[in-house]
Length: 503
Image (cartoon, rainbow, N blue to C red):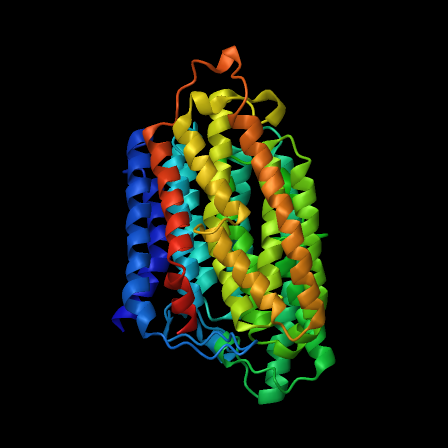
């Protein structure tokens, strides 16, 4: 019971911190607020790593023979005083649990939040209390999404996440942020309506088949449901999840939102929120609606390839570095989706590995772009040149992050890409083998647009107006150093995650 209580502590501590920051007794001082936020985020990360070390080793791994990624947590805890008898009678419980996938998502969430909070020093210039309070409120919601075993609670948290994200984008973004945030809300909410239809259909279908009213993901059995109904429910879920990934043609909100949001918010959006869509697919489509997902996998594979090609092509033609990184995320998430739809154990592990790797790489790239914007006043590639001569530390960290994004060996990006491509190549579906070959050829484009960014921005003649600009500050150095360390660690020791998922 100790680990179960520890799980609740991990989920709800950020919520308590969020409330505590807003209390009148907490000093409205920028320095105190920021120090508290950084130290609390570090403590939360430490707790998540303890969970990985001591809790994860005791969780059994089910045989993942292509498509059996069912959420079956070793540790599961319910909060009875929140649940009511009426909810319990219809099978809805405020319950949480963890398996190995959710533990990895917890660690990714706490680490990215810590990096974003640490790096937010120069980007938050107003409403300090509200900013850090919203960040921790969002963290608690995200941890709840990654651990809840009740699909109605999953949907509630999925929708609740929109509130802090909208406020974080609009209040601390640029003058176009409100329009971008509204677009983000409309896309996500529209997709969520389809997801709610899928949840309701699954709920009542499961009752018809088993005679049990339950919203518990671990108890729902759709194996005896006919193919047509599974396809309908799968498509409803996929529409909601594809918006969040995002998958073409539901992607148009991403670049505008990133461009107009502040740097810490972009780090969280790219590092964590884009992973929610794939996580949802794993839990519902991949794990429960197995037959429907299998039939739809060639179509999803084609969408993944479109994402990879389309995102890379758009990124190559961008002069705005932030939009370049945003479109590159579309391409990279397409690669993760390709691993999932390969229906192989290797592809599944590659998908998870790539999600984690991209979380840190994308956060690092957006933080780098934020530093460039802050110090040089522009993120237009055509207006930047030769800054490596005055910012060698920024240049060094940028190269490490870019090399991982390209997929160079001994960096985390290579491991995820290799496992995904290999998983697709050994798939039993001929279409997936073809998609893998196309994906390999398109990955060259990622090297082109990212090396274009390094070459144009960091090399060449330094304009006179930039000569007095200083290299990165201490807090910026710490954030980039931490990201670079994680990228290299995962690139040199991939078994840390691979064995954890595959024991």
